[in-house]
Amino acid sequence: MPYGELKIFAGSASKQLAQEVVDFLDSKLGQMDIIRFSDGEVDVNIKESVRGKNIFIIQSTCPPANENIMELLIVIDAMHRNDARKVYVVTPYYGYSRKERKTKPRDPISGKMVADILTTVGAEQMLFFDLHTTALEGFFNIPTTHLGTTQILANAFIHYKENIGKVKPYLKDIPFKKISEERRFKVGEETVVVAPDVGGARRARDVARYLGRAHFAIIEKRRPTNDSTEVLNIIGDVNGLEAIIIDDMISTGGTMIPLVKILRERGAKKVYGAVTHPVFVGNAVKNLQDAGFDALFVTNTIHLPEEKRWKGLHIVSVGDFLAAMIHRIHEHRSVSELF
Ligand code: R5P
Image (cartoon, rainbow, N blue to C red; front, side, top):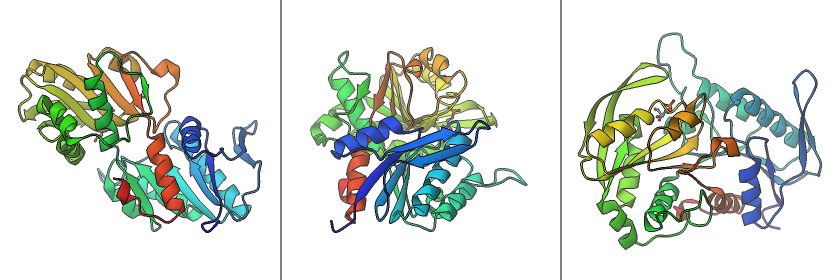
């Protein structure tokens, strides 16, 4: 085996996604027990030899972020102490990503601090999806692969539009396929892609470009507090179009939810949402259900248990895409050829 043996392990936050990845690779998850001592401390018991192997650990550092980060660190440590050849860390959702700079005097930069801890403990290469800001990649002095979900979410939207009423709540067979320009542009003609803020403009532009003839709008907003937003203006025309709001994450829903009503008031015929990371904290699930989206698309970078799913929510799997990436990285092949 020229590249050494590949073995994929899952942290407790990402078991379902990791299982999909190994299924695509026709492989099996590495055997490992993650347990808690009675005082709450984490312990890890790797149940098979990792000596000389290339290890990929998949663990989103989503809520409970501190627990999941600590667990990930202990798994990395266990791999190195037991002679793994190389440890690759896949954080489909990278927690603390919204803290990549000081926003007021005497602030920490926690995104950088988490990167430092991961590399100190032994992460030798990182993979993530849709970092809140690309600057985060520069916090690591090791190779990083930053995967986007533009095509995955846009394909799910096209599939939805072409099969209204027949789309499954969990989509894992279409997102990564190639869709002809003709089909993409046809959907684009009646669509306005909406960036919920200036920071999200690049991501939304990518979707608009993929849909070819799509219109584009940006919401101008301000944030009076960390968890609330106020819309000042919509730059671009949404009247008579079907709007799709693109964002990297929904946390409380405070950003997305008010936009549904405002876009409808401005004449949007339908309002969809497509976001990568469904963080869904507090009352987000209930509030999103009541928000009036025609459909909401999220990926499975964060696992959503049944009680956090509802009719109208479509979970789009990144499993096959991630599997292809892991396979290529392991074989030292280009990953950008797949974009
Ligand atoms: C903000 O810059 C982000 O891109 C998201 O819009 C935001 O973090 C979502 O959080 P919430 O759902 O709490 O508004």
